[in-house]
Picture 1 (cartoon, rainbow, N blue to C red):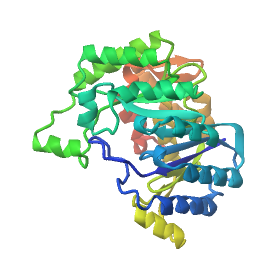
Picture 2 (spheres, helix red, strand yellow):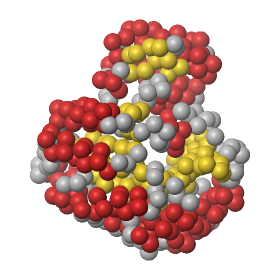
Picture 3 (tube, rainbow, N blue to C red):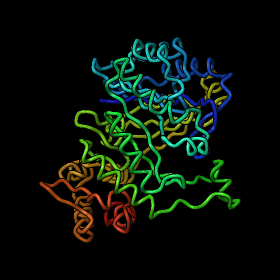
Length: 380
């Protein structure tokens, strides 16, 4: 069981809050797609022959790929890897890209899950974010995709901005429920220093994100979505039964994944790799067979850290039997002592330890004991 992530680092315009690697200059797009095809040849053994259960096109904006570019990548993956018959194949897209013709092309190519970056239904907020689509397109694109037979749709929302008070946020949530999508990812607005929002904040023209407002909106979101059939299965993710993200779920469960494209990350249990975050350098180095990634071999402590960090974000939590099996008795004892010390944060059922809902959004002082691995006796 493994996954493939493809980073398509192109956008029509720069969102004010986004600090992912991307470029608004698409002149190198054909060359970059060719480099991704070559990277597949160079790194196809990284996940050691495991069956591919998920393929995820992220970015950037993967919906800027034309029909030929998308098909060439998927054909290459199917040629070089054993892809499961029922593999989840997700493509992130912007509402303004989803024309009837585009949706037909995606369907024909084998995309069976759409991740649509709506972010908001507020026209003023979308302009402030510098999104390329309108509030009307936020609604119409979902309905159009559904009419084209896409029955596994996830949408992205952002909460905590100055444009959303509690009343308008409740309206947003009701609009989402009425769209009848299968999955929702919702992220608290953060101010990153290298973004336009970060620069404006430093100048004093943008306020801090209100932690109190964000917390109240997060709680309201849980309440509304759970009442309407969504399971809050990870801090930022809500899905209806049988529609959780398999791709992200595999990340959180520690499965192997291969990342292709500039800035993409890979993990194969033994090591973690991340590609260079420069389109031109990535293309040049892949074509000349130079090293275009950094590699980190994981220690036992880092393995444990990653397991605890990712699993506590989810409803699946940490399995004490698995901790002992993977990390030994010393780590299990340390984990159980920490849980006992901070028991008000946790639920425990048959050896499965989870964070309670109130705590899952933000691991507080309990997290200190989990992640200061050097203090665990006998490990280092």
